[in-house]
Amino acid sequence: MPKIVLFGATGYTGRLTAEALIARGAAPVLAARNATALEKLAADLGGAQTAVADVTDPGSVRALLGRGDVLVTTVGPFLRYGGPALAAALAAGAHYFDSTGEGPFIRSVFDRDDEARKAGVSLLTAFGFDYVPGNLAAGLALREAADAVRADVGYFIAGPGTSGGTRASMAGMLFERGFALRGGRIVPERTGSRIRSFDVAGRPRTGVSIPGSEHLALSRAYPRLREADVFLGLPSLAARGLQAGSLLAGAVARVEPVKRLAEGALERVVQGSTGGPGPEARARTRSWAVAETFDDTGRVLASVTLAGSDPYDFTSAILAWGAQTALDGGLLGTGALGPVDAFGLDALTAGVADAGFSR
Image (cartoon, rainbow, N blue to C red; front, side, top):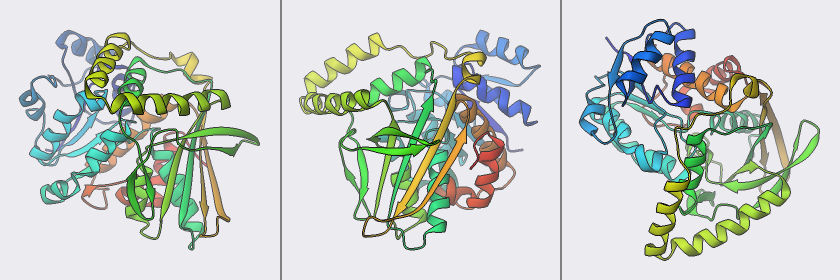
């Protein structure tokens, strides 16, 4: 009988996702590399099936899955550790969800679209705060504006805290190439190359461009879309700092030996799996996703803002919703999918609202 497997269950986002799945009435298999930590987590949650698996032993990850299963993986940084879970899902004929926010890894998942279609499975990458709310907001704005050819999406957080895994992911992307949708095609573009302001809850907030899933997913769901940008909300000085830092990182990345040394140093300094914000800190956090669509003259046609609470709480809740919906047969297609074409706008709107974000 098909099942949900949660790989990385003992990590920060993994534990939150395990809690969210069980709160929905699901019975996931909890998988991670540490048997003792798994046993404790299962006991804390009132009992659950467990399995030991480690990305350094790809066969152990493949052994988790059977045809028709749903794999949810929170094991990151994904550029470093994400490959075995993706490969295992494709080999087993299992649907796949991950929590990455790493643009280059997102693109690598979309590159396996044909393979997923042949296997009869769906791949849903970046299925969390990065980047489900923005995909939904843009989809709603594009539905309201039939003539739109461009979409801008911004993500903003008030009172944020970050987990060790998030910091490690951000460090891992520092020397990777970004991308954007230009002229209907995905093209290389340096992270931080664009800065703009959005109206968020009645006040202007600055965003700096980053590679996201919207570039890839929206262009498939809305073929008329010719240009898309995704922006991360930062204070103006920090946005300018990221822009300058990306120029320096780009220069370093062009010299392979220097790049390897810099990446090695960052891996030693920025450690993952070091926990994250506690419940009280998350309760104080507020988040928004804003989407604007434009015609070919640059005129704004529609604007949609979704508001919610903490990104980690949302990520765990939407992963749980997505996995259970997939297990129940709610996916609309196969291949590498964005949130909109995987579930449809109306079902996704309801799922996102259930996970804490609404218009």
